[in-house]
Length: 256
Image (cartoon, rainbow, N blue to C red; front, top):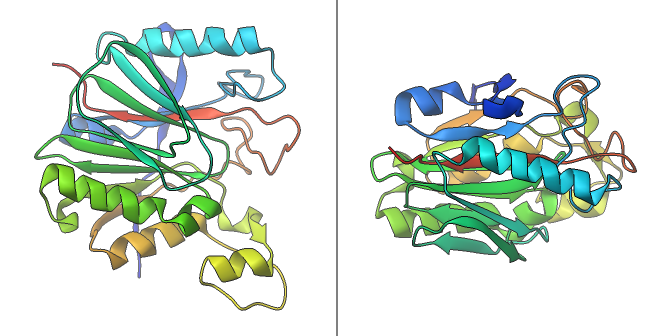
């Protein structure tokens, strides 16, 4: 099975926030979709609150991030992630930050709510049904994939939108590539790729795409960016286990 490659385009938002956006989602569907970046080889735009970076500096960057989206998205949803399959449906607009715990996915049908997940190798999965404006954003590492976060997100999006998954858009975003992601037999078995006698490399984005296709999604694109190989733009936990920062993946339908 082959999938279309769509590569996020690095740039800056207002206030100089470094990011890499999906231009076609904006041009064709009126959605804001992308991920923050480090801001260059000497960049320090780390948004990881649980990293070794100064917490005050990180909080300041979160405020800068929110300010750059404020006119289009008065509400921002974020959660402390646990690599599980819990998903929060945001059914009404709100103002300011909504900070949750234990969710690895968000979904909304309302404009003005920016969904966010933090990433540094795991796959941010962007889902949308443009005719109804329903969107979902998932954090999918191998544990989340095994737990069923992808199927949960697609199923809930179908319930909320009333649409068949064949009408959905799915993008597997900036993440670690197959060449740099080796896992052991126990992970391979849980992903349904075993049994295996030893470690091997896996492509998480392709696994996401294949599992999405298996439940009916047909419009699938995958990023070609590898977090490990592109240190100028992205943080990678596997490349820098003790010093890796975090990016924020974001998705929403802006206020008009």
